Every structure is written in C-alpha cells, then in structure tokens.
Image (cartoon, rainbow, N blue to C red; front, side, top):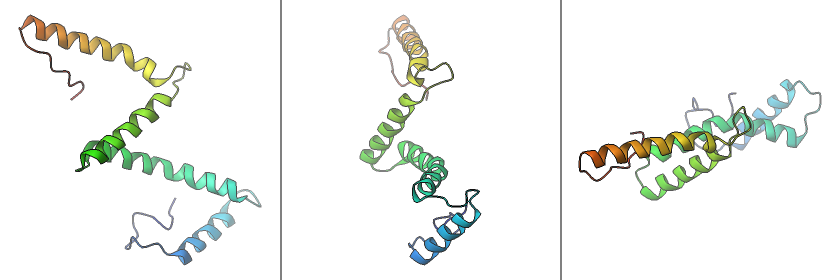
Amino acid sequence: MAGPDDDSATSNEWDPEKVDEFLKMERSVSPEAEISNIDLTRKLIEQAAPHAAMSMIHLSRHAVNENTKMNASKWVVEFATQIETEDGKAAWEKLLPSIVDEAEQIAVTAASHGETPDYTIGE
C-alpha cells in the first residue's frame, strides 16, 4: 500500500493534506460502500504492521544505543512468545526443547574440554 509515509517519499515531514488525500482515496477504493473509521484504521494498522515489525527487529539487532537494542529485543521476544502455532501451542513452547538441547550440548562439549561453557546460542 502506498501511503503518505511511503518509503519512496522524498521528505520525512508530515503533510496533513497528503494524508487527507490518501484517506479519501483509500475510502473510495474500499470494497465496502461505507467503510467505518474503525475499519479503515484497522486496515491501515494491519498493512503497516509488517514494516513496523521489521523496524523493531532491525533495532533489536543493530541499534547503536544498548538501551534501544534491549527494549526492541524485549518487544520481539514478548511478541514472539504470544504467537500461536498451527497446533495451538505458543511459539515459545515449541522452541523451548530445542533451546534446552542446544544448551545441554554446549555444556557437555565445554565440560569434556575442561572449558567454561559459552552460552551464546544461535550466533
């Protein structure tokens, strides 16, 4: 969806007139004859959500400020643990056994070599 905050825009400034034009166009192309404000808002948020999620993921990995990186990482983990998989289990329930197995392998390998385990997983 191309909107007033589209990446191809040359300016990062908020232009209320462009926003109004965009919303009028969005209403006119909507399959519903009269789309409510709530439905239009829900539609816009759903369309913006993947981009916003990618921004948070990027910040969680690449933010220069450690506080920003931590907060973004917290958001990603908290959101991911709320996602349900096809069998109705939370995503974290499916990940936990593999994380425990990997941690045990790291500990066993390190112990057999007389080392202190490095618990950096998945790097």
